[in-house]
Image (cartoon, rainbow, N blue to C red; front, side, top):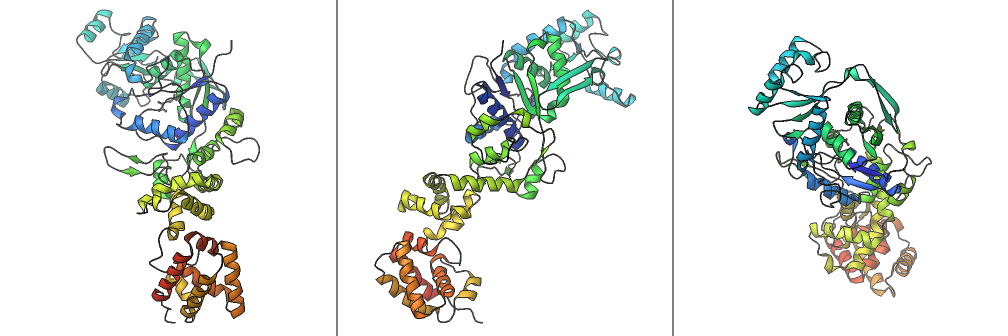
Length: 511
Ligand code: GLU
């Protein structure tokens, strides 16, 4: 019988979610949605040494911002909980016992110092079938010795007994069949008495089994663990329901040389985290896509295409289209270069396609940050402003420098534009322009433009010089949207006031 697709995103709360982790979550989500399945969020917090406060909230917030919806998880609940591994100790203890009782795992007492001594003595030391008989464990000690050590509270670990010389086959939907020999796998620690917690491997396998996970979709860095996981499934007798493995290609540095790291982001000036992260220990702040002015839809689209393609040359794809067209068949085996400029391009496209009224809503907090009270201008005005400037913007934050003059008259004028455009006769011509504008019967963009152009032509003035001087007084520099769209929006009084102020304050450069 076909099982219902159940996938899980299983981050460890050891810090902010890396953008590569976001892509893993996204592919899980796309696959679950496509198949009418369930997306589970499992918090893998069994490594208490690496626990970072705030990381779990960060993960939830990041996924919510991106529109990656979770069906079952710590917050969402579900029938397979708890969804946080530190709350599942009783469950793991039982399965550790099952392996020990079945002779598939054993207790070991070797201290870190003893293991270190062995490593010194034997250059390629590995705790496995060839060495376990020389170590201090339940295979070399009597039952009584073991029991009394445990009763005395001596710290111990439980190790998986890997049977050597067996070919272990991992079937991966992207990589195909991968075979490795079990002799290269060591007797992995599955449980530590010191904190009464299992290690990643055991908890991961037990939970995937109990949560009825059908597909394990995760980063390529976990591929080396897969043979061990296959062996664990066998040891438990769960091979029949073992999930299908899918190991996703790495995200590479922009130049393709090596894995994308946090430092690349700092070095090249782009975020590698979805949201800004404040490190609780060091106080260090790492930038995030949200705060850098990205739209979540753009980040999703950009990430979806890092390691997957739709099989044709489409680039702009909505979440719904991604859900429909995603397939592992079109995932690449090799790493995907993180082309940050492309990310910006996506964001620009999404800004262009976003309804102006929605963009205006996103602009409001930016206005507030810059000391502008949005209510003073109203939704319609702000919406018209963003419509005029959005084609110049790749990041939301760029709306402000491109639109500030719609909200406040310039207080400074660009030096180089003054030099080039503010000829000595300009104050006089601008004075005349004020008269023309005062008389213009209709101040809307087109009719106003017609009147002004007719006046310039009748006077034989230089069109470029006059229009740029005009722009300098209104905008503060010689760039921006169509001049008469600006004046229509700010209105006749404000336009004339700015012209007056310009005449008074702009002084021709001494050439
Ligand atoms: N906890 C692991 C991580 O942090 C999960 C790996 C897996 O998906 O099996 O990525």
